[in-house]
Image (cartoon, rainbow, N blue to C red; front, side):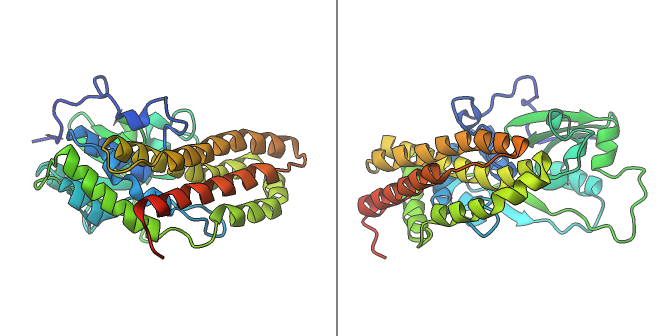
Length: 330
């Protein structure tokens, strides 16, 4: 047997992304890990909005914002999906045959240089680490169907051989990529009411875990100090900075607002003030990306103190709404 397919009805041509990946969102792509699980959960007709409370605990850690991702235990409680680290002791292709043939998805870090869906950024131009989910494997025709970011794609030929290291000399110091086994045999499709109840409890947990000091104020001070260096390094360095800072901050709070809207519609509570505050943080970061890019390109001064002050106030107001509405005692 040379073909293995976990979702036989799904093709790149008929794929319809979840609404979280529609263009109504400021940040269509969030980060590769969250995007992956949004579409995996959606592919099995479950609602990924329930898993999003972890975003309210996003924090600034010196040179980056949280690379936000759901906890494995939370995905299991919400959807019955069991995620385990894969011990990479054979070739990736051998593991893929074993596990896709048994109905398990492999989520694995690969080089974006070999992913056709990155044609606008990395494909056959730049090497970068990203995560895909292996769904269909056709060894004879050298084809792979995979989830990546906001979509479902196909690669073949040389890209297939490079991803699986077929016919390629592997150096002795080669370190296999991190991979996860995504077990689907215990899927649980909770009612909307039960999902909302579980998500509400998760929200309470993450509000308690929120940063104790306003992280946007720390981010503002760091940015003011770092801008000259970013300008000195140029646009390539800026794009790395922007992904790990502006995009993670903006996308995390847009997803936080989405979860709060979803819980409000489920009549768990009225989170409207926090929704408005967090959406403003998201929108401010979209504008900030363009402003900083221009300042880096032209190497001119840029004062964003008012923008950062407004975002810091939005963070305070949004968190205070959550504390009050959830009756959180610190």
